[in-house]
Length: 199
Image 1 (cartoon, rainbow, N blue to C red):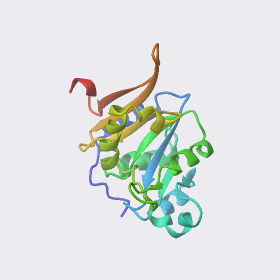
Image 2 (cartoon, helix red, strand yellow):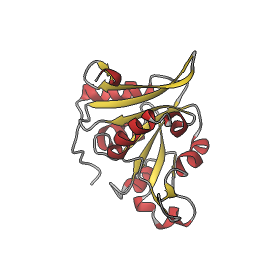
Image 3 (cartoon, rainbow, N blue to C red):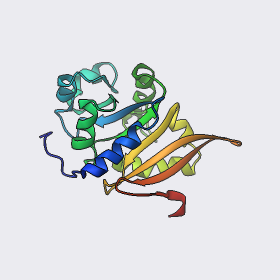
Image 4 (spheres, one colour):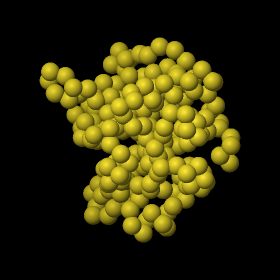
């Protein structure tokens, strides 16, 4: 049931999460959420009149609607954002991202990462990169292999809940004298930040 959150954050932690999601007013904030974790997600999104789209294409979008990944616009103070922060965050349901693009510009970019060729075969399968437990392992590998910028595309920041939901991994693209780089931080929702490179 969507009303229960197994990893409920304190009010102070929710305020801090909201601050991290919405600090830059020039960027749009989205969540990619996994209906496979909570099959009622599409119905909640429709009921809240959210701006959202499935990341599955063609027939898969209809056949797999109750288990599909969805990209959802989060706006400060909206019912959808409150629902994400209070009910979904901390339950391994998805991750947030910040970009200057609108939802239409994001759908294809993130959708093409979902259905991918299975290594060593010609078959295609679903890659559940949007699962925080997968993303927490995958992003550092991409970072080590210098492929994180390509994975992020035009996304400014990716925000992924840590195993302890009071912490948040933040990957942010930054322009430097040497070109585009990605900075990695872990943010404590109840306190200070620590740079991941120091751990």
